[in-house]
Image 1 (cartoon, rainbow, N blue to C red):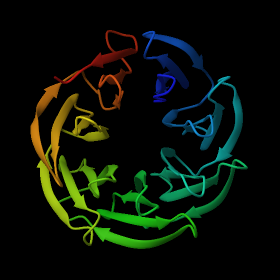
Image 2 (cartoon, helix red, strand yellow):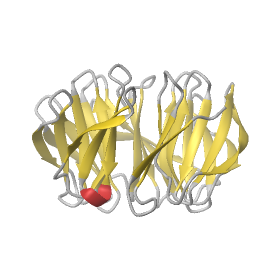
Image 3 (cartoon, one colour):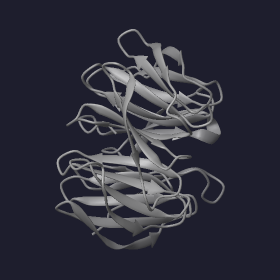
Image 4 (tube, rainbow, N blue to C red):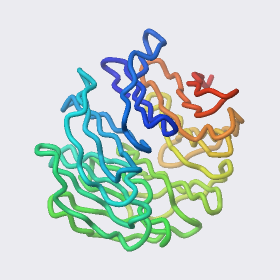
Length: 283
């Protein structure tokens, strides 16, 4: 989501389309078609670019945020999905679960410059603004790896005790925590980024957790699950307290948070035979 313009870019996998939703007007303003098997979408406002993983063509599609025109395509492994952006070196890191690689793209020239094998299936990738490193879930090893974007080399590998198949990841830079969800045993791990990557706590979540999101002002952490359950946690210092679970809709496993209005957006692929964007607010 672009907070300045209030635009939400939604990957509509079934239609191979990125839909652009104006959160202020409450309507779809355009559809960007022809992005085959679109999965992860990342907006980089500083560049005025949108990057979308086209898993059916094994590419990342580059879109102009102003005109919504496609301006480039870049090879990105076998099944590009999660996308992270390094703010310093202006590189994209694209996780390829099936190909077990991390693709590095130089956004200045929109070209692939490296392919990094993390040692197993690459789940989600996230940028940590404090260390300047990219962290990647290696879900078949139950590990987090850290990559130095300056060298495109793996510099650390950390075990995740209590986790089976770490799939999703979110960095909390200010409190120096990483949130990891494990879809093999339906738990959330809180990992200490400041002290040797120790696991601080293990919390239950809904079945098959997928996307993590945070309301930074309210310090609420959301875990959207493929079972349709939304698990909600209150961040307290360097720990979390579970508030509860709420069923939203079948396969409501993607979530975006508007940091200004605190509204939650859940794209649903099929509700009553049609795609729906559900808007909610946690009170």
